[in-house]
Image (cartoon, rainbow, N blue to C red; front, side):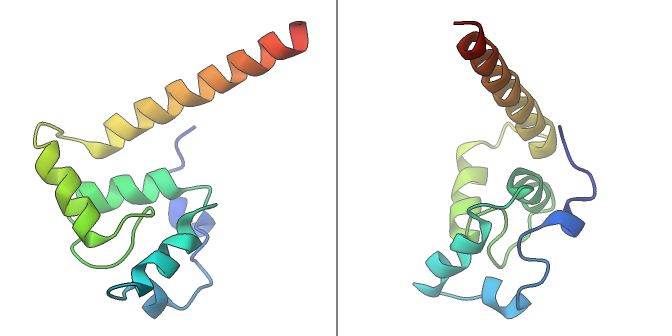
Length: 103
């Protein structure tokens, strides 16, 4: 399920914003904030669709996002792509759980 009001549920909502706008090795620490975030995918899609240049968004640094955008210039809507992928993943997990319970 895609969450449109993702900012209200973000793991970083109560963190120091400056912690997400760092450089070098500090970016790896910033990415840890995103690791268990329930809206990581929504955040990343927003950053990619809006070409946000600075900071860690959705667990990716600006360098990682730029590289992804270069590798996939054909993507018109990251939200659409990631929403579809997320839905498919969630359906496969549900199917796997149902099969496990049935066996």
